[in-house]
Image (cartoon, rainbow, N blue to C red):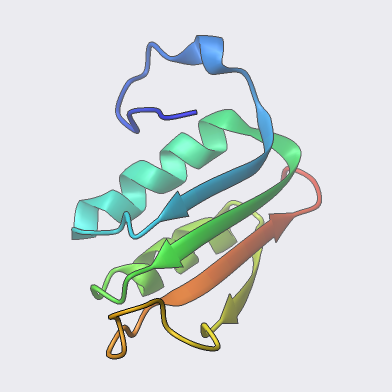
Length: 100
């Protein structure tokens, strides 16, 4: 399902136990917007997988997720996708066992 992070009228989406996003932390304010969105739609127990394209905003997002009670595991892709030999992105998996 696709959704707009800033659309506060999307309450009809419900809550999810898995949220996935890829290369979406383009600007500094995205870390705040995305973490608010996740908190709004995540179930008490939730896994969030975010592909961080290494644009410099992943650290801020990780700190926001920690304040929401998520632990983090970071994985470096084993081999890059075709034509992306210089890709520096990382796979971040956040897990929360219950709301804080």
